[in-house]
Image (cartoon, rainbow over all chains, first blue to last red):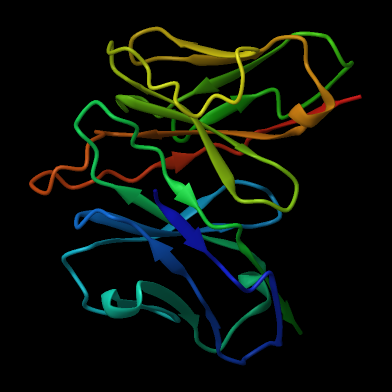
Length: 118
Length: 120
């Protein structure tokens, strides 16, 4: 069975600080995808990144960076120089390789509520 | 359309009533998903449609929940005899092509804003 754990329920930092959101996953598959989504107060989930299990390269996109470590089953997300607009709930999610017609639904963590104070 | 559209955005109903939630996926997306998000929780997968194939209903919590989709168009999620524990945000997502074969890139799921269901 697959599982995603986001141990940090809520994080509060002051603007311009760096912050890392943790994600630990469990899966028996060797082929899988990991995702991060942002859910601002408006409620709509916004896709941030997808990473496949065969690519452990870290990725940087502006102030966002992701650290994928298969050895520790972690896919952590760092925001550098945080801004108030980064305040949202962030979800990490996992999708395992299906059998073609199987469920391709994502398994989500419970989310981390990030509060950036001005 | 430009994004996934869900209606209504909010629905208040009385316990025991039936409700119907609608999802209009991104045009051309063959796969459609329904999720439920309870207050303060992550998303729970409910059901998945791919084209004209039989839907994967493995996530539906009870037989009071059902969903339909005609071809690659609009989907409706129906909850019969609603209970208070059904109160949640129901999110719909669509993706261009499903499947997770190594040779085929997993397509990203794009989400609608959800329907907030409150059962009194």
